[in-house]
Length: 400
Image (cartoon, one colour):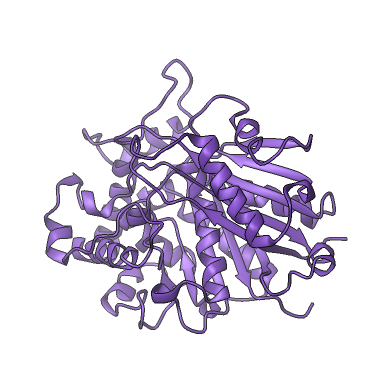
């Protein structure tokens, strides 16, 4: 029999430009983990399992990271799932609690990154995205830009060609997310720009300019996941937010088949299926979502994900942009009130847990000027090409 699962504590560090943040990853995890434990009102010795997510680091960095919180002998599992690493750690923590193997689990994510675009670390290994890149180059001639903006930029080009979206639609998303970040003290960037500044920034891979792309970042985030029994025993209902639905999906046959396109190659089908499963478990639909943190590694992906998550029908995501529906005061849902990856930053292992943190705060109504009024259903979307997509639905505690 499965147990209901709740996030009872969250915490994160400020995200910073690589090389500028004081300390090292154990210090950042200590800060984020301590904040999550304090938020939950429990001591670390109550945690029965820990899942530590990071992409760049040696084996057992997860142990070294959580040992600052305490050496209690619990199982610690290191998680690496590309850009969806943090949400994958959260997924494992939730599965452990949901399956009755623990009543309290920690998910933590962190990253200490290099400046500049992402690149492959092990050139004498098979590139894990070789099939994706081969399929992309079969439909788009290789260009000199880095592989990530090239993949997502090509997906945007396919959307423009097929459905009539335009570069200014993607630029508006960059403008929106930078504007949202002004009210987020944890964001790497807190600067607002004009739409013209977004459009006129240095071109990375047409139609993507620099101000429409997420930066590399340093930082950490954490969440405490607990069972209903644990919440009841420790009287945590005043801070508990239920994970009502969650799914982790990897690539299917459509991603790299002969009929693929740029949109599928960056995980749209994974996102669509993960959203379907998460909505079904939570017994909600896309129209119920009030606030969403989604994986805007670049602005094109945010627009594509509007469609994958069901906020717009296929081919009509740019109409949400034209209506300014996804910002404060729009018809909703409000998307990336934190500033998203584009402006908050993107330390790969921490990103998913920072999304979780923002949405827990939103449902608790504790984020001041960036608060989405009357938010009752929150959706988190985190994707890693190569690939894994994690979608999570959060709601305030409700009757079983």
